Image 1 (cartoon, chains in turn brown, red):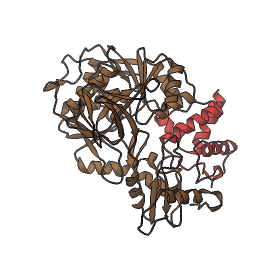
Image 2 (tube, one colour):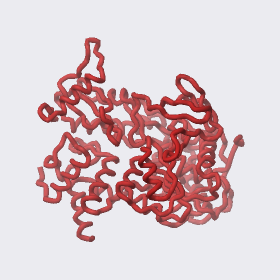
Image 3 (tube, helix red, strand yellow):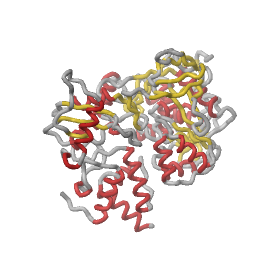
Image 4 (cartoon, chains in turn red, purple):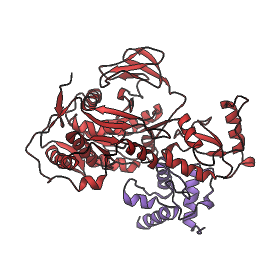
Amino acid sequence: MVDSSTPLIADYHPGRPFAWRDGEPVPAGVALADIKAVAAALSGRKALFNLCDDRYLFTVAFAAGCWANALNLLPQTRQPVALTRIRERYPDAVAIDDAWVAARLGARSPIADPPPRIAAQQAVAVVFTSGSTGEPDPQLKRWRDLAIGSNLLRQRFFPEDRAMNIVASVPPQHMYGLENSVLLALHGGFAAASARPFMPWQIADALAGLPAPRTLFTTPIQLKACLDAAVDLPRVTRIISATAPLAIEHAQSAERRWQTEVYEIYGSSETGSIASRRPAAETSWQLYDGLCVDPAAQPVVRGGQLPEPVALEDALELIDATRFRLIGRSADLLKVAGKRISLAELTAALLAIDGVDDAVVFNPPEASASGRPTALVVAPGCSTRALGAELARRVDPVFVPRPLVKVEQLPRNEMGKLARADVIDVWRAARSPRSMVRG
Amino acid sequence: MNEQSDLERDVAQLLVTSLDLEDVTAAEIEPTAPLFGPEADSLGLDSIDALEIALAVNQAYGIELRADDEANSRIFATLRSLSAHIERERAAA
């Protein structure tokens, strides 16, 4: 299905828009000159930490890494502890940010050569799932895996579109951001805005700065913020959401307000995106072409971009080999702002802090919109503020339990185990104003 | 502790209310302490909080806060910088 090598930029024409910066298109020929110049600067390196925030500079560095055969390391978090752990494994890696790449760009004019070909089997990137207490879990991506995944994504959402201008509100270091704003430019012939808009009005400005046709890749939290802020968006062909479940009402409201179609993607760092649905119209998920799920106690997805079958962490109800309903997320798994960690890992991280005698992290009885966990902690000498701050050095701040509730002891039974009901009781009691333990 | 100005007091209350902060009161937010980041005196806010603060500020003051550039991290650095930015934007409006 895939040749032994494919061009770094598919369907290359020097003049087609490859990206948008400050409202101006960057022609593919200029981008290729930039990539070549940065690849030369990376020559001899085995790996790079691609920490660029600017999506164009990220893409240039990413492609330059592919060209120079230097592995792109894509940490999802900037937590010092996680970065140090990754650095220990790749001592040769050079850390690259916007300023580093901007200082090494080419001579703003197209080069004559066609794009180089990249070997299908070449390892080009490592996506790290959430840096936690232990080792960040590295997911190695080969050029072929990314090329197939990106083609399937394009087939699903853009079968007829010869061009598409993309705004993405997620970081390119995240698998979802990488697929929709970087790989669609390299493999799909589309052009993404360099901006990484975060607030609703920034998303609106970024879309307004591009000509039609436009697609917005975003997250449920940001889509809801756009609805709450009642921003005006220019005509958007599609809005696509991923990283957490999108409420059906929000999908419907967004379709009505902006006269568009809202889709949701299902996937993970391990698999990339593998299925989609339009929540306003359907409850079931349709796998991308060429992928299928094996019916088993733990469902396994195979085919497509996956070099080998991958077990899915969620509970699925299979309708047929290519359609399923999501029954639920694994109970131990937390997903906040598109990042994952298990409650067990988070509890271990809290217990590893000096002064913490006992702790348990759990989902509160009424889930908050952000999906944040909460915690009981026994740490007589520490303030909750200091504990939260220390934990935020070790795990992504979005996982820091809120509130962190200090108690004198946890309701462990004689076996030392904790029952959820007992934990919730103690948590509720500790939060009643009368008995609040202040840190 | 640095004394909070009137506006800082209002913005502090907005932070506590919009973020459901339980372990700190508006009066306890030090105007010059970092809102984000791992420092010991930081309020320990994160990107989701930034989004919620921006929506609340937008609703209360009609100002559109921006994120992800250097100017912005200065705006969001402390209660004082955030309040000063709101004041400047209101004056300019």
